[in-house]
Length: 483
Image (cartoon, rainbow, N blue to C red; front, side):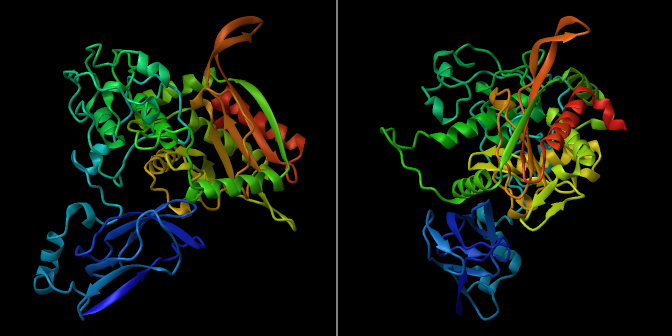
């Protein structure tokens, strides 16, 4: 019998410290090889650590919530000479017996779904033909396959039932609107779906998506043509609720002040933004764009069999527009190093994502080489992973240019701060109908405002203007992508 002290490792990003967020095991538990035993929060992401040993957990050396340096022992594992658990059934029985005896919630290896509602394929609903919304949440390319989702509990309406209307739940007790309501104070005054006795109408894939995201369908406002809840409705509710929960939850004190420790992602965001704002001289430009043809193009793509099962949105067209504009203006996709300017001949496209843990910017690697379908799928997986808090450090490294979608918050435009190491970032504002002059006549058109910031050490005003004009030209006429 021997004891192994497991140190906090460097997970491959030059890590110096990390916070112990959640233990997945307790003293006395058997632990298998490659079993996830703890979640840690680094300066960039939430990481699950797998065990490199088999044995029995003897002691947890660090309490959850504490921050420790890399190399600090965090766990003691007791093993026998053969590396098998010391004592208990696993010491005398087969490895299969030992695995069967481990609690299911902690024995699942990282990356394996713990699904309550069927196999992983059920978590990949196709595009709802009834969807009409063109809005895209910050960091939400789409929602699709989710083999790595954590187990979530269904909402009180039974989010995994079928399309047929279900009996509404009894009126709930009053809820603090800051704990997840997407509509603010107005939500507390308006009658809920249950109080109005309105049935929930949603297709099985939509119910599955709601279950996986922890969304209570009885509180979602439907936008479908028959009063049904669409994918966009569920995703919008999940994103807005997560942002509000990040600000305040019922468990937090309701006093006059609240002190939130600056650590993890928030500390990294603050450091990066100060560095970018005060080291790179920003210049910003803006343009109003008639996005009507983009919205029409999206409708045609949704109706195409080639895009069956793929969620598409204005973010997809914006991503393609960025890649197209980079090809015509290469210095917008570069890096400043004091001694030289490095122009990247590839596009690792960053998508600023608002998550419950804060703002992160994962990127789609080699986006310039992807077809429209491949890019849509990549955006979908990237944003879903970010929303679940599963984004890994490597997915946020080596970005070359970034999109931030502030339109989800109803904002027309803004002056975004550059992602450190990049020289351009583009903000997509809300797309909504406005009066627009067409051929001398005022007509209702879908209009958006695009804003962009550039590092003026690399990008001069003429290049910045041409780059943004090229992005706008694709939003105005997506057919230019066929060039």
